[in-house]
Image (cartoon, helix red, strand yellow):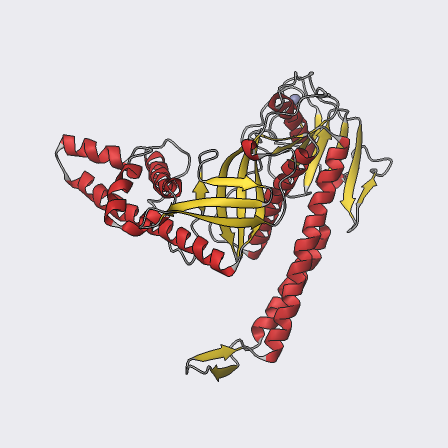
Amino acid sequence: MKLAVKIPLLVAEHEAAVLDSQSRIANWLYNKLLEQANILRQQYRETEDQQRRGQIGLTLYTERGLRNLIPDLKAEHLFLKVVYSSVLKNAALRLSKAIRDYQDGKHGRRKNTVRWPKFRAWKRNWFSLQYDEPHKGYRLAGRTLTLVLGKEASGKQLEIELGLAEALPHWVNHDHIRQCRIVKEGQIYSVIFTIERTLPSGKPLSPTKVVALDPNHKNFAYAVDSSGKAIEISNPYFLKTLDRRIDQLKAKRDRCRKKARQITRPDGSTLWLPSRRWRYLNTRLQEVYRIRREQTKVYLYTLANRLYRDYDTVGVGDYVPQGRSGFTRKMRRSMHNQSLNRRFKQVLSWVALRSGKYFLEWEEGGSTRTCHDCGYVVEGGIPPEIREWDCPGPGCHRHHIRDENAARNGLTRAFKGVGLPCLGHWQVSSRCTWRFNGLGLEVRRPLTGSATGISPQGIKSLP
Ligand SMILES: [Zn+2]
């Protein structure tokens, strides 16, 4: 089982300066290699000499070609030596990967096309420091992370010690860590550990305690478990209210003057100050953002804890939304939901690790359009507005609740994912809704008299 754990770092000002400088140098190397790659690409196009083309190809289009340019660059630019070798190597590997993705797109080896890599602006995008070999270049003792940097001109090995804001759980130790990456988001530095841990031994998995979640738009997720229970997990409604509040405050604030007053600093330089009302509204806005972050966290942890209280294994569909250009506000909001989904998976894997249970993602491709009972695949898929459908498969005619059918398929895939034998088709015998009320989860049964608990307006038959 592989998972990533992200922990914020406690970084003092001078440590921040060291990390920034390391990141800046790795970024410089990336751009320097890209500059050389651009020249080689041009030469590759212009030369007729097959042997020369072969040489260039080896540098430009192989996994480690660009990495082999680093020793010469180090000899020429001595400042590269203050960065640990695997961090530099990683800058080269990242660029090679980007170039190979471009090549794969061009030659139809992947679905979407990818652009040739661009120069990276360090100010806009902090270059993460990746230590990708186990136990090389970093040490963890308690809450202290020691990063090995490069060497000083005198040959002295440089190191930096950083404090972790939270400890790793006690059953994860240094030996479980495969990789370590330092990132900076906003003003926060964090470390991301990739952890590989064998499944905890002891009690064998009970096949009655598996649940599969199908995340989607209509609700946060629809779940079906191995005892025949279906759960519709409602969207976090508080987010809608808070988002509306955020929009209102933002609109009000932006009507105020951001450059209201100009002041002159002692050194003669000038600075614009926003108006009082702008500052007041901005403070309120930041406060709503803070509440939003906190409530989201409570929501995700409440859900995850509840799921792992009831189940040994939670499988979530690997929901990949379609990327489109030309974002509207509504689409951005739905993107927000995607990142909520990503965070939910992080929280699940974290809670699973903490409680010695299992988390996995099942492949969602085709799960909606495939009838769980007969395996018939609806050609062209099922439009999103159709919430219930009757299977047109020969001799089947089963009535499906869209998300439930997808989650039942997910349950089969989740079983395969943990290596359990799959016991035929999953049937649903009861349905309920989980709704977060700000404190905990309310469990509601569907109204009696309705077979599904879902209003019949959504029922349409497929053409
Ligand atoms: Zn069918």
